[in-house]
Length: 194
Image 1 (cartoon, rainbow, N blue to C red):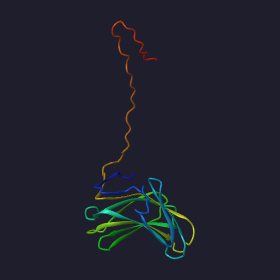
Image 2 (image 1 turned 180 degrees about the horizontal axis):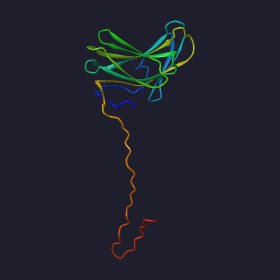
Image 3 (image 1 turned 180 degrees about the vertical axis):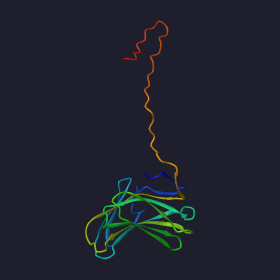
Image 4 (image 1 turned 90 degrees about the horizontal axis):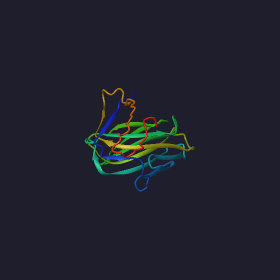
């Protein structure tokens, strides 16, 4: 069992609940793709159209921009429909000054949380989701890539001594006695056996 973690100083969270094309700008390069959300998870549906290196990107501008020295970690939860072929998941981080950092997430049939360390001494300007056909010889089929959240943070703290984080309260049998009679009024309050 993995040790529990907690993130520190999280100025940016995209919970993948807004697939507005004005927010996530699409650029298709050989993969016909769409970005939708169920209110919690992005689904990128894509179909490669040629035997070349086909891909599609969805880019979001970050406002305000963040210094990577202050917030060097990105956590992203994602999965793909294919295990070894189809659409690969990836991300590109664009910095002010025209530089960028690309990360190939790859394939996973189960949700994974990937931690990405951003290049130092940069100012993050845009985040881009990338779906890329793999192998490049794919020219048909429909594949899916899912993103659950994208979180920018300062650090990730792992609780070092946590071994069993499950709390099991002891069983309790509570018996509340019937209140005693007050005055000469008959009170029908039941009995412990009722």
